[in-house]
Amino acid sequence: MEPRIKILKERKLVGMFVSMSLAENKTFKLFSTFMPRRKEILNSINNDVLDLIVYPKDYYLNFNPSNYFTKWALVEVSDIENVPNEMEAFILEGGKYAVFTQKGIYTDNNIFQYIFTKWLPNSDFIVDDRPHFDVLGEKYQQKVPGAEQEIWIPIKLKNKVSD
Image (cartoon, rainbow, N blue to C red):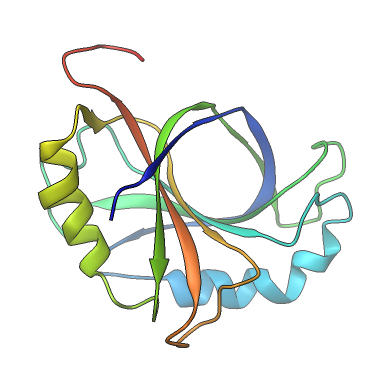
């Protein structure tokens, strides 16, 4: 399962966020609040929803399931001039990403084990300190075995400060 390596340009996004940990997972609550309201975002450029995570610096070096991070539910927009009430704008910095396609039920986390214990250590890359995100596109459906989503992992070349 080799990823596609892509260079992402900066993106303008609008959505909602929550502070959470793996031990105190609030993903369902976040998306249950956001999804019924996403049609209020009038300038979205496609139907994709991004499940985006901003980890604190060195999150993986000091991993603990109780460590907090910020999770967002977002859509890409043409501009950030008109943001609905109780939503926020988010500018996603561009950069290099490893893009994996996950097929199957979204709760199957085997792909993350593969990415972080097999692919990444044997690649020329390390995780970069930028947001991670999943693209929940047209083929995404919760709890459906044939569903698909894209997993975008920020990367940079090993032994380089920036890439």
